[in-house]
Structures are given as C-alpha cells and as structure tokens.
Image 1 (cartoon, rainbow, N blue to C red):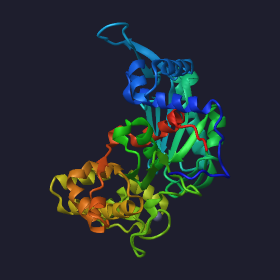
Image 2 (cartoon, helix red, strand yellow; image 1 turned 45 degrees about the vertical axis):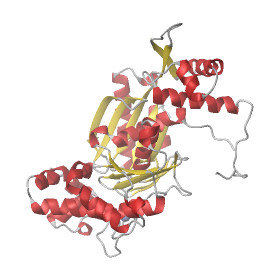
Image 3 (cartoon, rainbow, N blue to C red; image 1 turned 60 degrees about the vertical axis):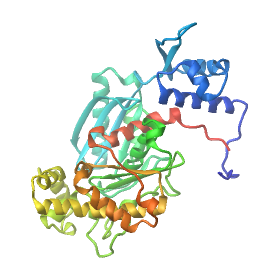
Length: 407
Ligand SMILES: [Zn+2]
C-alpha cells in the first residue's frame, strides 16, 4: 500500500492506461523474448486485438522488432517479437580509484569495445581526456548517430537530478559537475550515478525478473565498498542522495582509517586495500592519498593475495578470511535494516568465495536477529561480468522500461 503524495503527483490522463500497458508489454517482451503476440496476450490477460495495437505502437517507436517466424500446429505461423538493442548504443564509464573503464555497448549491456586507462585525478583534465576518448571510440566505429547517451558511475555520492558529484572521497572530488561538462564536450546526453547503485540498477533492468528479485541489496567490495538498495522495484536514493552508504557504517570507532577521513568504517575493514594492509601489516592512516594510489597500483593485488591463500600461505588465508568475517558482520547490519529478498555480492574478494563463505555466513548468522534473516540468500556476481559497466549502461537503458509515474 503506497500513500499518494498530494504535494507531488502526476494526474492520470486518458492516455495513461495505454502508456502503462505498453510498458508492461515491453517488459514482458524483454523477459520472454522471443515471444509471439498470442503468448503476450495470454500473459497480459488481454485480447489479441488490444495487444496487437500495443505491439504496433512499440514497433512504431522502434523499441521492438519482429524476428523469425515460429511453428504453429495449424493456422498462420506466429512472428516473434524482440526488444531492439542492436544499433541502440551506449557508452558506459566506470571511474575508479585505480583505473577508468570505458565500454561501448548496446542497450542490453553487450560489449562492443573497451578501453582501460589510469584515472586522471585532476578533474578538468579528466573530463577533457574522457570526452576525447569517447569521441574517438564512437568515431572509429562510425557509431555516434546510434549512441543514445553516456552512463557514468563513480565511487561516491551523486545528485542524480543535477548530475553533480557531491563527494567522491577516493577520487578527492567534491561538488563537481561532470554531467554538463561531458555532455557539452561530447554532444551526448550524460547520466551519472553512484557505482553501487548503478550495479543494483543493472540487476533490476538487465536481469530477468525472477532472477533479479524485487527487493535486494547489491554490495560491491573493491577499492571501496559500494552498495545499492532496491525496494519493491525502486532504487533508493534518499532525501540527500546518500542512502545506502553502508561502506561508511562505523564498525569500531578506534578502527583503521577510512578514505572518507573517519575511523573504523566497514570499508576500512573489507576493501581490497584493507585486506592487503592486514596481510602486509600496513597502517593505512600513515599513507597520503597519493601513496595509497601507488600502493593500489602496485603489481601485488588482492587477486595475488587470494592466489597465495590458495597456495597454502596461512597468513594470506587468514587475512582474506578476516575480511570475510567483517563482510558478514556488516551484511548482518544490512539485513537487519533492509531485510531484502537477497544480497548480491560483487568485487574481487568474491573470487575467494569458496575460502570465505563459511566465515561470511557464520558472522551473518551471529548478528542477524532471526533464523530466517540469517538465511538471506547471498549471490555472487563475477568480475568478468563487469557489473559496474553494466550499471553504467543501465543508466541509459532503464528509462525505456520504467513505469510511468502517476499519482
Ligand atoms: Zn568511511
């Protein structure tokens, strides 16, 4: 039951019902493609005639197309419907502390081109350089006309209405406007979002409904910890765009220094650097941001540490499993607060899932308040899926499928 907000609403017009039905049809085609009109009508519990009109409108909008012909026992053979993603392109950008990832993809998130380069920390230089790379990438494929926009994800808080980065501690960027500058420099619409939220958005829009779930939390453990919360199919942003900053939840007031400047944040216990610091005996507060970047860029990464743990290095295994325990303790807080259908976990440490799963689950069970909450499914997404880039692509793709907002 949702209360109608009488200070902010859109009145339903004569065309609203048809708009909603068209979006429902589009989402059903997306999830069940290839699908015939007859099957779509069955799923929508509408007559063939009504569905044919909706389908015709979607065909005219060029968001779907008719593909191969199916088999029918008798009568006319059905034509299958597909969501059009080819020749509808997006540029996805994942700005990280260590590297920036640039991907050209179609609206289903399928990769067509990729570039990875060192992140430039000076903001004006970063934008100028990025715009140049985007233009070059599109130009080399003659794809500028088919590109519907640029989706950018950052490790930080973003006002998604104004497109300003409010605070990205890892990058040292505070209150900077990337959207307008990048849009002006590329001539393309630009959407920007926090990376954890964008990962959640990708799950919501690029996965099938039955696999994505309807209320879930996405937790990405990497340079930092990014989270995205989806409740009843809606990404939660919060009043001031900081909802879901679980990475900066205090675990211990006297704990290790976090990149946000505080001590003992969840992130300071489980980020890649935190796990490496545990192994090497570093104290992170001793390092300047520049030194941290150098440490991060060193050839020895979290994946090397996990390899050592697998090779029998007990200290490496201990460092990784301790991160697993802190991961589980933080997840217990996430579950106690949100109580989602499931939690998705991403980031490099998930490649050691077989080594840490019992530690994560034991910690989760230790601090959740009911047996059911302790059984919250934890699902692993692998780095090969580039979840953050898929999230950036979803920023461009999702508005096509979202429900029109009424009442
Ligand atoms: Zn912090």
